[in-house]
Length: 193
Image (cartoon, rainbow, N blue to C red; front, side, top):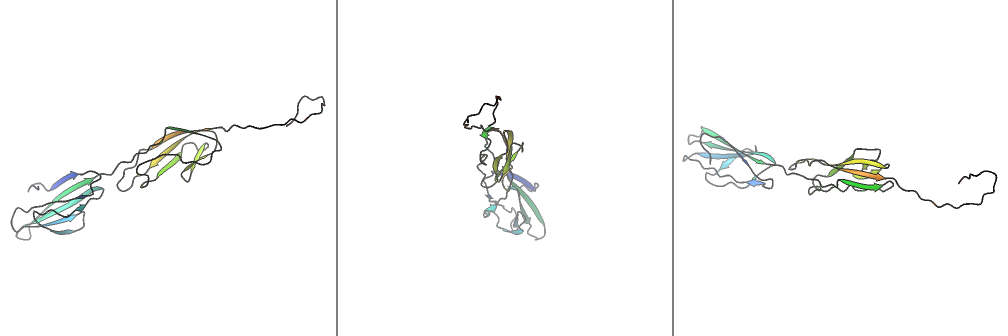
């Protein structure tokens, strides 16, 4: 309900709400109403009749309702601002992981319910141990590296909080089989293999 002295109104809806309906009623007979939804231009509005669904974008949506008096020249505009907030994103990523030097490139394993909309990207804090190639961890040497998972903002979504994982790369053990050949004693107690 608009009050004659108040021309600005605000409201908030849930992220999942994508439309609203407004009903404006002219108090004086013969007055006309128009609505301008999000800058699309003024169109006629029937007094006391609910509008069709008005689309809500993410962020602030402005609905201007103009009341023109019976004389056709005096008018007053009432503004309703409806905020539809962005949705949050959340990354799940194990705190620690380990692998062995020589392992093939592998998926870091972070997940998010919105990863099909906003891809998770990765970076390595120690490029001497691990790098990121085509979204996969590429082991360079033994040691440790902090892997950071990120998910950017987009229309309707806030950026996720970065999540880190400490990756430990273990050295690869080397084993071998040796066969001793007979050595002719030459007064030397050492032999080369």
